[in-house]
Image 1: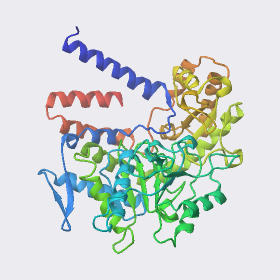
Image 2: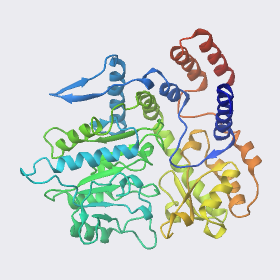
Image 3: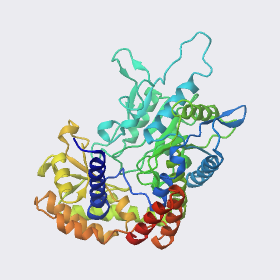
Image 4: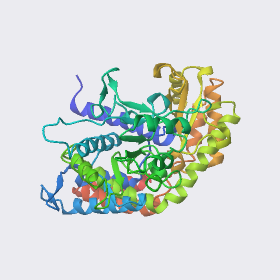
Length: 478
């Protein structure tokens, strides 16, 4: 049996190898991931990462239940302010620690809201019906009955299945909604909650279309937009709150620059119809769903919000251009790209390809990984099962942040075609190409960031010799 030092050395060696492979040798194209900047990472491991700061509103005052929380209270207020600026909204709830938890917090809050005025003696009820994107058509797990929606929506006694209705899609393009049929289904089913958002996400959602139809309903449905995949593209891609969405949720680590957390945002002014819903959402964030809400990542989110608000316009436009260029280049290489060529195949960071004629999606994704190209195999809308997927899902956001431009995605598409179509080994060529993209953009430069990171290291590890060695190595490597 290995000794303690042996186990430590072995683990460190494996971590180092994985870090080197992911950060220096391979192209990460998974659309739900990103690498945070050095300062975001340093914030994440700072002192708050081991602390608590439970708090809730009581009699109009925010009450904290721990001492030593003045700093993190200030951080949370500032983070809400920065994200309110990003969304152009008045209310932001930051305590969910993931996008899925953010959705669950909204579902819990809505159930509580719907039961606020129930007659005495009447049982607590669930959401009567929900309209969302089908899982097989790109809908996200967190908005499904098998995911975070579990137990929050009523069952149909005849089918014994939840009352969840899916948006209809076009036959010729299943990534877009069929609007005439959608209008009919809204009138027929009268959902209490409409959930937009997908994980296979290449086009805008019909927020304004639905908001216009339901605006005079009494009561009208709550319109929710899960922007987990496209949160960092808020504005250039879609502005749901301006288009009629009541609440926006998302995770902060996909196209957004942050650590792994969740967020809920919206406009709920005092006296408005859904102001009580916002109060219920806040109460379900704490104490309903969290105790410790991971204060290290909260601090990191504030730093990421500073970066996003400073650099978002340039970053967002480059992501949009790179995705369209990547899709076109793949199509030119002879790979089938999903979506409509007239639309440039995509309006987000995502590019979807169909690879079934060359092998199962799982097999192609593994071959790409073995050649230092990390992707995500994906069941496409006409697949019968995820286990026999026809597609590969890719995103350009992380590599855009490492400096890739349209011409670079053209080169990368050639390597992908070599692997997918010809089953050729291009591992070393890909590794060498990645050497051109090792410095992160849309944040402080290394010359600006390293001295600041060094200060944080010395404050995190107050053992002078240890901290000095870490700083020396950091400055040497960067």
